[in-house]
Image 1 (cartoon, rainbow, N blue to C red):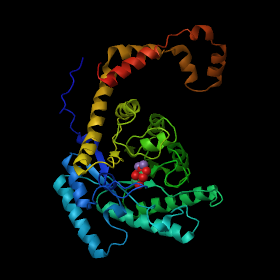
Image 2 (tube, rainbow, N blue to C red):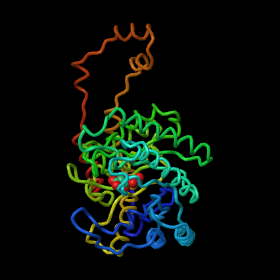
Image 3 (tube, protein in one colour):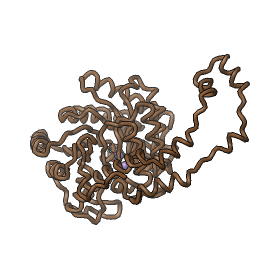
Amino acid sequence: MAKRKSRSGYEPDPKMKFTFGLWTVGNPGADPFGGPTRERIPPWKIADIVGSVGAYGVNFHDNDLIPIDATAEEAAAIKKDFRKALRDNGLKVPMATTNLFSDPVFKDGAFTSNNAAIRAYAIQKTMRAMDLGAEFGARIYVFWGGREGCETDAAKDPVEAIKRSREAMNFLCEYSISQGYGYKFAMEAKPNEPRAHIYNAVTGSYLAFINTLDHPEMVGVNPEVAHEHMAGLNFVHQVAAALEAGKLFHIDLNDQEFGRYDQDFRFASANLKHAFFLVKLLEDNKYNGPRHFDSHAYRTSDYTDVKSFAAGSMRSYMILKEKAERWNNDRAIQSIVKQVNAAAPAVSKLTKKFTKKNAKALLAADLDRVQLAKAKLPYEKLDQLTMEIIMGVQ
Ligand code: GCO
Ligand code: MN
Ligand code: MN
């Protein structure tokens, strides 16, 4: 049995590219029922916190860094301080994004607004935010359409909404190309909240949408644990679909109880088994993009506890990574895996590719369903062994 690491043995590995958003670690704890419980701190101070826990980088929305009404002088001063904090803490900015949801102008959507001038403003704001991200070296650009939805379908034509989203994405792909930014775009789905209904509700919707764009090669997805769980879906399967399609450009790690409002819990704090299979999926498939924690510390926390939240997010990932290795090297588990993945070379060579000859041979093949149904599938045993690894006794 591999030796278990001591309590201090799970330091964040820079190869994991663990990142936090200015809006996550800097979240002051407001919710719809109450104001902030932590003082608002400037971007450079947030970078100090992210640096102090040993993360790889920090991401931002345009307005996390530069307030929407800042003057040019204010913007220059904020950027200067932030750049210094990045340098002092050895932090990168792998991803940037646009806030297209907070300002009242976006109350009925940005790219999908019914008002053509608001749609144009949303594209203009994104172009400027892309300039800002590129200034800090970001190469991934996330699109989360927080207000791209409705409360009533009387308000907006859902087919038109898709067309408007496509027009915006096509325009912005060309903008990135013309500026030489080399951005990869990552679309982030969420089923609801803050709108009653949000278009492109799940990652699978975006995987279909991307192929209708002018530059599908530039565009992938940014799935988030909480969002797919809000929709009652198996997140691991959504991520697997993105990975298999070569479209997992970014990932938002957090946690969420099923069937609740958007909780943004610390990664692996609510559904440990799902978190385990997610880490195993990412590691087995050698995902090498950023692992971004899009979560908030409890409203009850002060900034000391926020550090525990950030450090804990990365630590849980590192622990689960070790557990996934343990699972892959466990002899009892691997022997069941081998047993259930029964090979049948004579017939599988026929199903590999359709030819008339293969079809004819397959129709004639002797496949005895009663006999086939007898193969043993000891999944109870396999799952218990898995759980014992997760619970720390294997
Ligand atoms: C949310 C979203 C956001 C986005 C962010 C980056 O539920 O509020 O997850 O945190 O990820 O806007 O685009
Ligand atoms: Mn979210
Ligand atoms: Mn997110």
